[in-house]
Image (cartoon, rainbow, N blue to C red; front, side):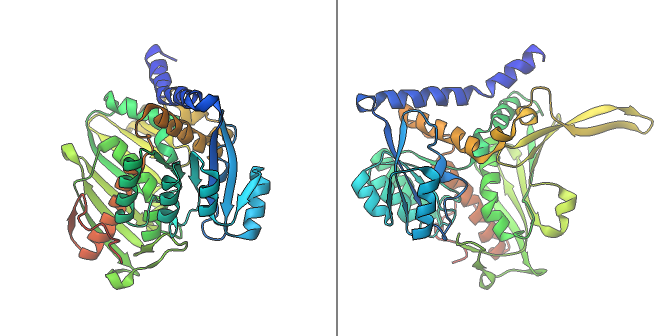
Length: 395
């Protein structure tokens, strides 16, 4: 590996290293170096425990899981056996009141109780790690952000991709001009049976979080949303497969305008899934393109020349030398390791009195982009961001 490539590769891990040091400082600063008390809130049958969010404290030095809450009797028993926690509660409010944890994982995938759970944890004095989407409405998100600020608490959201080593390195490479001036980002959803509104809400939250990391805050959005081949109206809104709020449409094509002339397009249409390829995005600049294949541990591919043929130059998508996603192990790609990267930065943020990289503020901005698509699709026009309407656009 060339010296420049090595420096780029190692620099991509700098934030993670800082996070680990920050976590150690947080533990050292606790009274008498006692372990930080952690608790988990889940609800079997109503979002369960998300993507392993009941296990985020496993193996974290200086952190002790002291209690777990689940309103479902059978689910609570299974969670206790899985986590080996000694104290369990049916009522999470009772758990928070009695145990007064310093750290809380709000785990359910469903958002029907998210605001109440996060608010209760903050008011009990805890810092919070929670599943995505962050909240059901922007009004709920605004309320929680204000409360966390007033209480001096830090919230991290499980947008794992933002702190994946491959993304940390890619961000540095783009900032150094690897593809020249960024002009366009083409985002496609997973476009499976959830294509359209559910794809936008469930997976778009990850995609838009990464888009903001590369391009900043969106200025306006326009969108076309179809249901069964026709333009949608608000009357077409319906519940998603899981209780994460209303959705609309089985085909979505949305455009965002970003500063410096950057355009972002989001597409979720099952009928073109095979043509657009896997869930992810392509970033196009004045000097080249890079493709990001979304997953718990995103894969990064660069458009590179593979030689000159009789018909001209052939170009293919390949990882660069030293690309972390090309050599990551199965363990590094899994949810436990991905959650741990977010947790390490979250603990560092608490110790350093800063916002986590995967912050609630960033998650709110991602949710706002999703709601902007719904609003623009119903309007059949353009909406400005930030959105003035903080209620759900489909309500």
